[in-house]
Image 1 (spheres, rainbow, N blue to C red):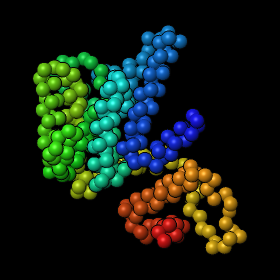
Image 2 (tube, one colour):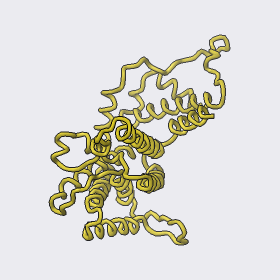
Image 3 (cartoon, helix red, strand yellow):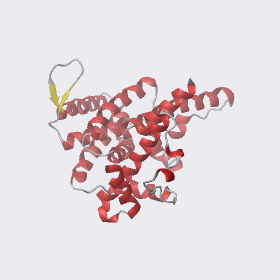
Image 4 (tube, rainbow, N blue to C red):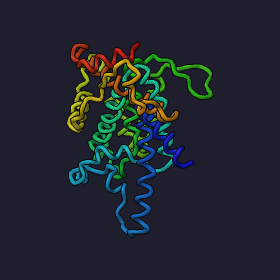
Length: 295
């Protein structure tokens, strides 16, 4: 039973879009760190906490722990904080992916979180807040305000409200709420990080629409550095029954779905290569695979 649930979760993760995968990662990180903190506190009897190690606090701490500018956005203060961010990420992510690719969402999400952290640090002395910064809110804001930048008049219908509103109006509400929190000094650092993510998402979308996705290209180059050199996974098959391997026959529904996901991943890689370098940049094996799957 447990194995079936685990297999089902693995399949949903591997076949899900980037918004779904980001939600999975956030949830796993949240519960993993809860367990680690419990062990540190009760078993090891240590005063060290994962929040102290990975949350963003100040420029001084950032010099010692530079990873905090990335890791803080994967932490959440409590379960309610996590749920609220993930619900917003789900709806904003689906809206974003109707217009753009999975990798684009990841770009806005990651660098939106970084921008939020930078704003938190820059205005720390001005507004005199000393609390830690955790949460994916700035990253989600970046995706949300990227959509506002792209299509501010997009109609959106809210739960329990019969009429729809332009997306821009909802953005105004979010900004007004955060400005109020800053003025009232209620989680001022968190609200400033939200504004940082929003500003990044809005402005970077303007560059993105012009075809200037320099941050996305940066992530792509980093990915290539870490990818192992592997033999081509594209194989040609003779159209004879004698050469068809029984190992290619799906054993069950899970195996069938797994093979389907792997094929889709190969297709996505090829299409991404075409969008970057053109059809002629494909190898013969890639062209044959794309032709065979397109029939």
